[in-house]
Length: 630
Image (cartoon, rainbow, N blue to C red; front, side):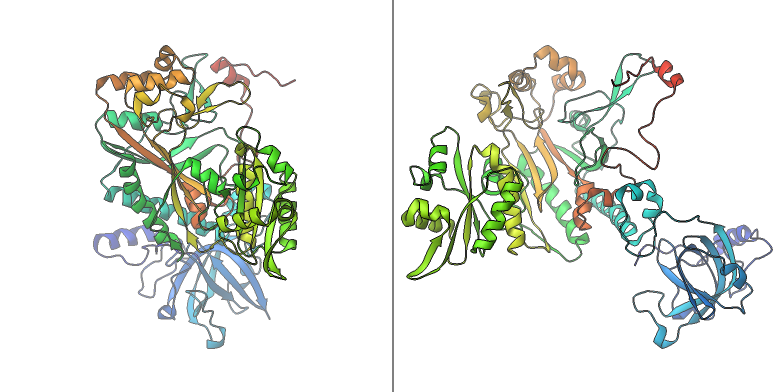
């Protein structure tokens, strides 16, 4: 049932009461009176969630949508719905409004005047706050007719996403989406309150700005006053919040809109999203962690619907996260930890792995699976690997044999009992358990290994469902090498401080770690941040390694470079994705279920017709020409 605050429509006194009477005197000839003799508000005296047995006998006015109509032997029962809830109203042939009520259809918007009556005890609906009463209709006015509906609001019917997005205003009337949007509003309000309580102040940063590298494509905006030049919608308030720190505002936050021209995913909007953006001066990485944890933990505890929220957030290095979980956003509800078991296969009888390990940069990893010790389950996981594009996954499982516990499976036969036993001991497995193996260069199989770990955890019931498990992933590499070109580029945020400062940048760039960090929850990245590089000498050197000259850095980031010449403080912060947080709290698998008006998978707004073609006049004014695709 929907929830929300009651409208202050009845409790008025003094000057407010005089104003209320003056406004309601203009209702018209069908003026309806309170039981106390005062005129009603023109649309409602109560919401559809307010009336109880205490109101029996009162004359009331309700407005809302026709949720459902039922005809019981000539008596018409209507579930009248507004944002706050549902009230049952009814009409029989004795009512002067009966002829008009007979014409009603689903989702017509109406106003009714009537008398509150108690339901018979056998007809009480305990699921509704208004379930003990009903309202007998004396008068009814149609406020807005509805044509034949492209999707039904009542019930839980499934509709194609294209239909739901094209008629989003109807889709949003459904209970689940009403609850999701109210949850989102309450989460944002809660985050604001918690940030204020931590001594932060909210400041707004520009929406129209200059392009900057944030790891995704910009949305560009042509300038009418400066033909041939373009603004950009900010991918994040990154540079501005750093400038706020240089300006001396110590603790900043903002519920910030961000714009990125990205390919859509289930957990990512293709155009825009909102984040809790924050920055602090004179802080270390740990200070940032200690500040944001109570904000997010408190929010998840308040809106998590009773699910456990971990109070201890472990810090895991990026390297260990990929080794143990196959991803830098691990789901710690699943206890499975992968391990490197290369030594057990080096020079073994299993030629595929033995030859593989002779190549530089290769290894064999094992995924332990407690309770997965059956050939049927092992074959199923092998088929999963093949669907993911791999030849398969080797496996060993342990079962009861003639002389006690024995290892089974093709791998066990090839490498022999001594190596098999060593693997079992390393992984801490026993009878009824299994282990799955993937080999090669980690970058080639880690993603599949991570997916396999998740599938194994789900299928074997190892993953805790009613829990929010957080962890910080730290020590991200500053740079990465392009496998095709061999060029070095930033792997994460280019404005992060390298660990070790200027001295660290003199060695192998691929070994340089940054003060960069992400917060993962249940397999999703919900926070990303860094301690910023506030020293120009370190910044110029860091960018030069990625191929940017000092002149290029000054040209692309003139505001930040100039500001850092005038006493920049050490500073750092992070940003939490609000859409993704609400998606987790609402237990939704698709982020579009928690965004009021989302785009579809092709970054189209089917409801508003965006993107649309500009007129010739608009193009001429901007001095632009559209080149048609061949």
